[in-house]
Amino acid sequence: MAHQLMRAVPRLVARRAFSTSLARAGGGAGGMPAWQVNPRNVYEDRPDFPMPNVPYVSELSDAQKALKAKEAGDWKSLSDEELKELYRLKFHKTLAEAEAPTGEWKTVVGGTSLIIALTFVLYIIQKKYAMPAMPETCNYEWQEAMMKKQLQMRNNPVEGLASKWDYENNKWK
Amino acid sequence: MFRALAHCAVNVARASRPTVTQRVITPSLVVCAQRNASGGGVMSDEEFDSRWVEFFSKQDIDDWELRKGVNTLIGYDLVPEPRIIVAILQACRRLNDSASAVRVLEVIKSKSGPRAKEIYPYVLQEIQPTLDELGIKTPEQLGLA
Image (tube, rainbow over all chains, first blue to last red; front, side, top):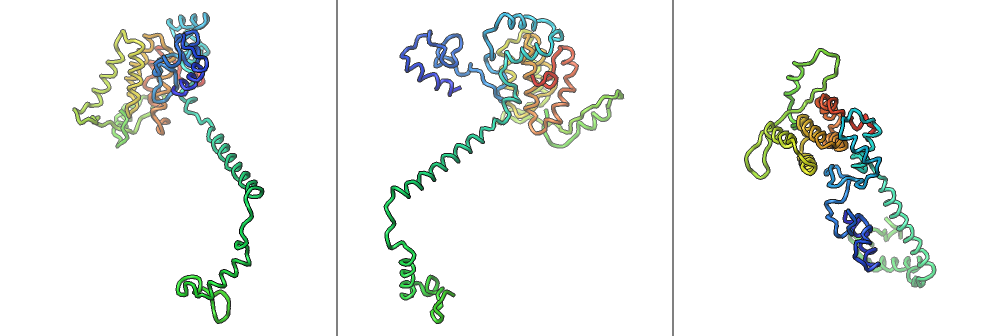
C-alpha cells in the first residue's frame, strides 16, 4: 500500500505534472493519481482482511461482463473454470497462496553474506596495499623479549604472569 | 464458539450418531461465556451467534456491509459458528457474489489455525446442505480456486 504510493511519487515529481492525464502512475483508481487514492481502497491479499474494498479486476472485458451476468443466475450452472475465473476477477491470490513462503529469506541471507564477503576482500586489499607496515616492536622476537623483562620484574607474582613461571627451572609451570 | 477447554459437546453428538454410513466429525471443544475486555456486560455465545446471523440475514444487505461484517467477524479470536457461515453464504448469494463465498470458506480454514484439520472438515460438514443448495464449491474442489 504505502510502497505503491512511494513508487508513484518520484515519477510524478520528475514529470512536474499533477494533472489526471498522468494518473496511471501506480494504483490510481478511476484514473486518479496515486496520492489521491484512499489507501483503504488499494487491493491487498491479507488473511486478517480477506475482503478488500475493491475487486482485483475492476475493468471487465465483454466476456467477463457476460460471466458476471451469468453469476446472477444459478451457480450450479457455472462450471469449475467459470467459478475459478470469477474468483480471480475478484481476488488476486487465494489466502493459501498469499500466506505461502516466498523464499525471500534466501535472498536476504545470500545478499548479506555477499556484502560481508566483499568487506573481507576490501580489508585484505587495503591491508596489503594501503596500510603502512607494522612497527618493529610487534614482531615475535621483540614480544618475547618484552615478556622476559616482565618476568624479570616479577610482574603480578601472586596471581598473574610471574606466578605462572617456574623460576627454579626456567620454564612455564 | 470453539473455545478449547473440556469436552462436553462430544457426548451429545455421540448419542445422536446417524445410522447412515457417513463419517460424522465431532468436535472435542466446549463453549464458554464471552467476556467483554472493556469490563462491560457479558454476552452469551448464543446471543453473539444470533446477532451475527441477524446481521447477515438482512435481506437487502449490501456489498459493503457483507465485507465489513466478514472482516470484523474474522478479527475476533474465534472460528465462527456454522450457522453464521450459512448466513454469510446466503448473503453472498443475494449479492450474486460466488467469489466471496469461496473466500469465506478459505477464511474459515485460515482462522482455524493449527486445529484446521479438526475444525475445517467439521464446519464443511455442517454447512454442506447450504453448499449443495446454493451450488457453492469449496476451494479444494476448485483446485483452491
